[in-house]
Length: 300
Image 1 (cartoon, rainbow, N blue to C red):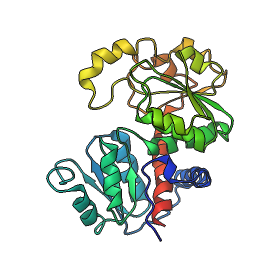
Image 2: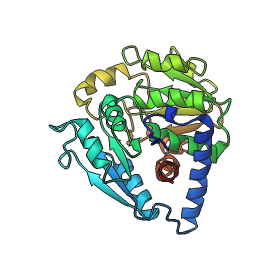
Image 3: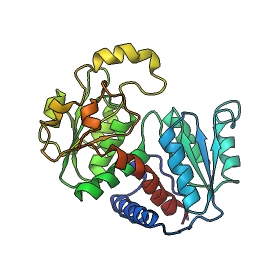
Image 4: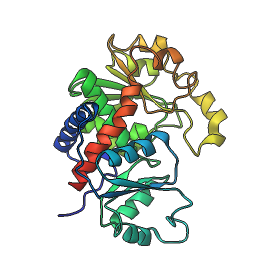
């Protein structure tokens, strides 16, 4: 059987994604009941981090432990990935020793090249273009709170970044409408948007995007590696904060999501992220459960 990778949401079919979300919900129930379930006993996940992350490391490492397996944390100091040794060689060697490899890096092309030469599943834990694992957690959170996402409307407010790109993919695969409000100069990739043009489109202002929306989502204005752009980005995104006034224009029962870490007072106000419409803590926890479902799917 051919090796399956998870570099974007597009690597799974619509039916596979929906089944994976349901499985994540069941695995969460099992874990909360204290059930011992170890389908990956003696399996080893390599975790390659060229970009640091709290949630990504904790969720994957805890998930493998709960599944009876083991995870190896590899920082930029611990590998030769892209630092003298060709990516192809790193992939060939590591995939002979590991059962799956999770990579969190900058260039999406790097993880594509690695997967091409890997003999085991490769999971994208974030690149500069996509963050599909976060979307699994977001969709699980939505299903737990509201049921099927089909026919609903989500609003993306802020940067046309990797999270925005993954939401564009999700809109098509989970069959919902995505309205995107992004400042000029920070638009999502036109080619990615074009593939989902029946499900995602740009809006002139945050108010237009949020009007009547069932879900409102944002992200930090400056991601890791963009620190030098902070001042320019603060100016460009000044009118793109998700605050209480903006949320009143969404549907009365609209949910708010943020992949974290959040900067209160910048992309979101404290009253929103800490308020009753926010489900960010469920969303963060669900990184654990949805990724366990993904690991089970790729390795079983």
